[in-house]
Image (cartoon, rainbow, N blue to C red; front, top):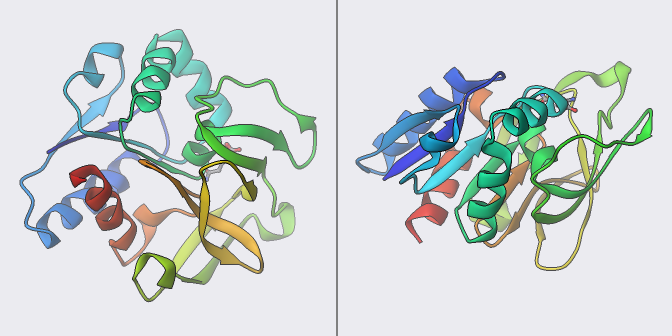
Length: 200
Ligand code: GLN
């Protein structure tokens, strides 16, 4: 199994290590590649879009020609895990808590509505326990960093976990979006769940 991680900025290294741990836990023979240019997308079975700054990730991916290829591949069923800024990249509807409408380059394949920087300055970064019973896991502690909120799931997308009534984990077929950073957690459950999706 070969998983690509978009590697422009954001938590590439942490996702790499967490994914390795998840491969070991599931006794999977996995390979991890860093995605920077379109040809890196060849022959991957799944892709992770890390957190960071969604505007930067989008602009760089567009300039290097990766954005359109990613859009095509994800639309044709390539499993994807988008975390924080990565979740923003996947959303069909995006706005910013402060400035409202945004016109940033997106992948825009997932039936979710997202508000960037939802938690505002007071809570730029916080940790919280999230109930993962809907995906057959227990509670787990995750970190939220200038996190967005998934304010609506529609179409085929489903909310799989909420925090104070706001969706923090959503899935639509092979697309998985988290508003928190699963790569910065002690638990590998989200990466394991993603690998189950990739395995099919
Ligand atoms: N606030 C960032 C954005 O809007 C996301 C933050 C993160 O990925 N930790 O893109």
